[in-house]
Length: 276
Image (cartoon, rainbow, N blue to C red; front, side, top):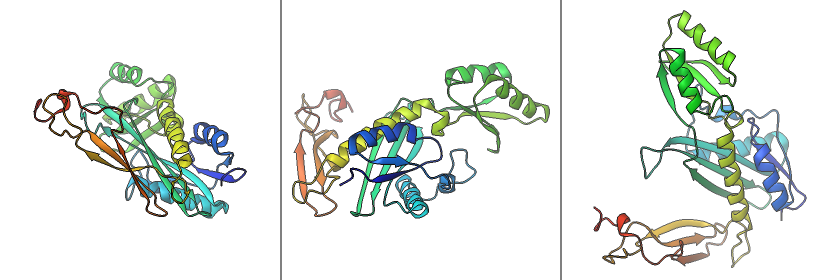
């Protein structure tokens, strides 16, 4: 279905470096990018343009625009979100989405990768020593930084060497601007994020190769989870998954997977009754 076809990776931040090798080897596609595509129009991490709609909607728009500009009927896009972990709230995390669109066969596949492997952070800094300590924690200079004033206006972004960091910080201090430093989460300035995108690409390949047993359409993936895995101590249902449910978007065929994590009981530490 995909062997020998051209596939546009809808990015302007070098994500093809990590996505293309995975897809080309697994699917036999020929990946390319479109220099005319401006993905910043769907939102920027630095706040100049707010993302409208959900991450999936933004990713879909990237694919649509890439296919319109190139005439290609096969595209992949990526969209990232950063913030507190949805379960362990005090830990920062990176959620990456890959959106795969095959207009020829009317296929859309979405996969997600949630990772705590991120340097996502920000802080107000009063002097260069505080800025230096933040930079070292943020894995600078291999990972880029952004300087803003306290109103959120960008002073400089894509900072990736000590001289430029010092220069931009001192310029802000000279005009009396309080400074906020943030990690630059754009993929080409964040190798850690790139690795999460690469992991998501492998997950996308697995989803594409998972075909519906009824109609053979790719993308027969988990669409829902049913909680209720019993506690090992009290045997009451927990919020952990008892079943995963796969549903085909093409024909509606449904398949339930019991004990998806290969365990029939949950540890009592995750039980609302034993560990309220």
